[in-house]
Image (cartoon, rainbow, N blue to C red; front, side, top):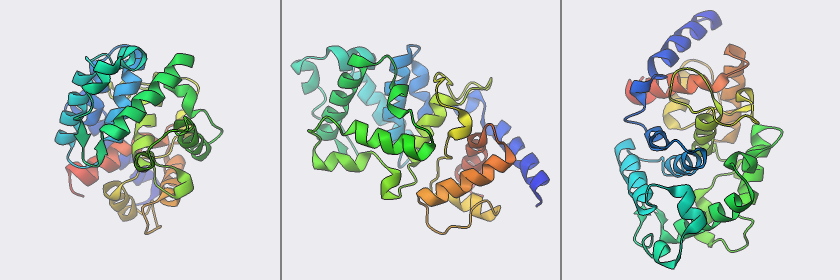
Length: 251
């Protein structure tokens, strides 16, 4: 398949999955329950961080957490008391437990005390610098439990940073399809890195968009560079096509 045919095919598949009907069965449905920007950011962040395993379980566990936060996560992180924190102690999702959750809540409290948006935590010249900077900023409180570090990926560790890149796609991309929010204005969609997991990587290799055998940061960058050739302004829109082909269609 030549480049013109590949672009045409992937554009068609992107349009097929980038539509409101995609939302209900995807973790992006969690932040779509909210209208306040900060609630969207916090709910979206947790939904993205929890996104490994079956999507139904991810949605259920993130919904459980939002209920523990009285379905007002921004207010919760800023105004919680000791009794509120005790409600979180039984929470667990796979390897993410209450110890990790309490640190996340503390981070959000510190950040939103001084900032109106989580976007400020991701500002950087490139995707790599933005994610590396966020990792160090997230753990800058000086009291993170050692076990919590594994829940935030970093290019410095050669992680593909799939979940963080997915979160950034949700917050940054803006179109009229209704899935991604596009509520952040300081980060350009052209600077985003395509979320890369084994499913997306498998499809990308099949189309010759990815040659690297490891599913790591270098692979995510390689894939994004190829997608930029197809659309220099909005390369990660093709995440819809690659994900849909890999997960939904078992391509």
